Image (cartoon, rainbow, N blue to C red; front, side):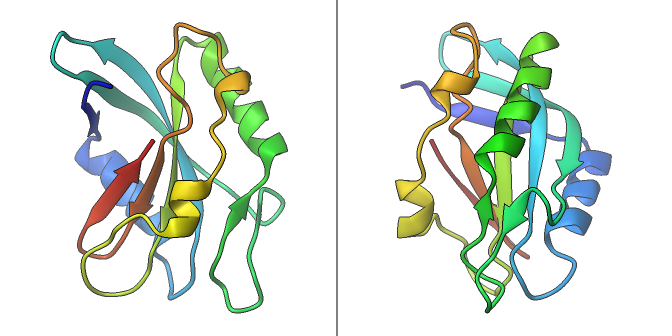
Length: 137
C-alpha cells in the first residue's frame, strides 16, 4: 500500500476544526476528495467538508465512542463517486496530547462495497485532535 497524503486548504482545515472540535465530546465529518495517484504516493485533495448531524451519528452516553451510520456513509459515498471523488471519514479525539487511532478506530469495517473500483479506499478514518491527527486505512 502506497503512502497517502491528505491536502486541505486553510479554509477547509478551519471548517473541519469547527465541525469536529466545538466542545469536549466526539464529533464527525466527511471530507470529499479528488484522488491523484503518483508513483510514490496517493494524494487526496479536499473538495468539501461535510458535517454529520445527529441523524448520521450515534454516541454513547458519555459523548465518546462515536458511530457513523452506514446509511449516511453509503449516501455520501454514492454522491462522491458520481463526481469521481472519494471519502475520508474524520472524527475528533477532543483531548490534549498526541492523537493516535484507537483500537476501536482500527477495528472499524472498511467501506469498499460503497465505492467503485477506481476510487481510493473509502475505508480511511482520521482521528483529529486539538494539536495533532492520525490516520488509519
